[in-house]
Image 1 (cartoon, rainbow, N blue to C red):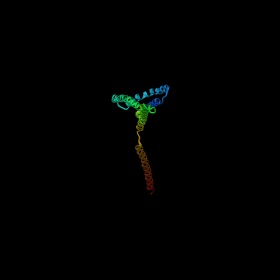
Image 2 (cartoon, rainbow, N blue to C red; image 1 turned 90 degrees about the horizontal axis):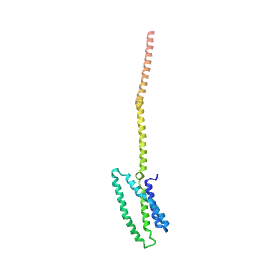
Image 3 (cartoon, helix red, strand yellow; image 1 turned 60 degrees about the horizontal axis):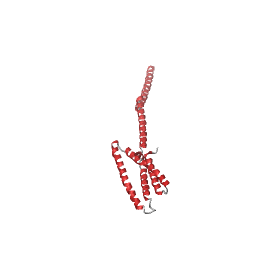
Image 4 (cartoon, rainbow, N blue to C red; image 1 turned 45 degrees about the horizontal axis):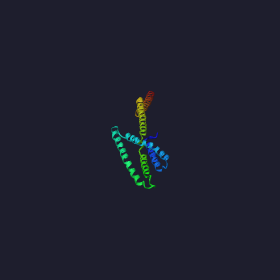
Length: 197
């Protein structure tokens, strides 16, 4: 799956190609080819809005989306003014006539660079959900193993200490019984010896 982060990078690269195509175009066909890439740059804003939405609480959705749209409106107001100033400052020279398009390439390139540094677990909701499911599976398996161990001990009802005490008792009983047999045989031999004399 492409993911939100990679989709945002792809959109920024298409924006670079779009602006660079305008700067280098010499014919109408080249202009139309460059213009076709602008459609792919339209993925950027919904993707940014989605990333912002996935990283805040439900009660903060309106605040975040309002801030995103406010920044978009500000960019829509400042962008055309800035590029108009660049165009007027460079339109007299043939060598610098396409400077405003190169400025657009630089802005898109900066956005791509910043996007690559976004943490994947925060930028991609699918990635974070997959990691969460793996953690839940791991905790479930460990819990079942723990319950199985407790059930096994409960079924047998015997632990290491009980086994040790039982073995000692059995050993002690054997020693006591063997001592009793030995002492009884000695007593019989003494009685026979006294009878003879």
